Length: 157
Image (cartoon, rainbow, N blue to C red; front, side):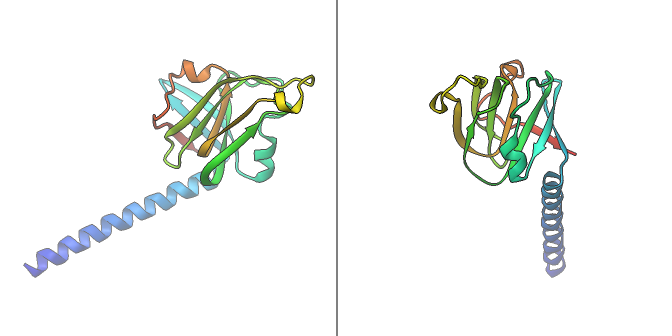
């Protein structure tokens, strides 16, 4: 009886260790990622990674176009309210806020592009809770059939 108990404890401990190591490996993949890929409905969206404050501040600003199946993923240290002010962003976008486990909290569809004639209070601004935020071309979230509450498959490289 004692041997069965010890065997059981050893198996459970090994399982917990494997889960821990897997989670650490996944965290390292995300932290060291240079690229990411959103995979949905047999489509792959190639995502640039914005991890540093500078990369996150710059985002997709000043670009005049974005390839159809391209976008950007912002990786933040903490899950919390994020504010995206779209000054100098000349591309209409869908902006998707994700939780730590990649569940969609909020989708802002067709966030209008910036133009120089806009006053500061006319510039699009979106706010929602998330640890990750994805920007893709406007209406791509409809094409991918993304829904709030859905968990996304994101691969990091």
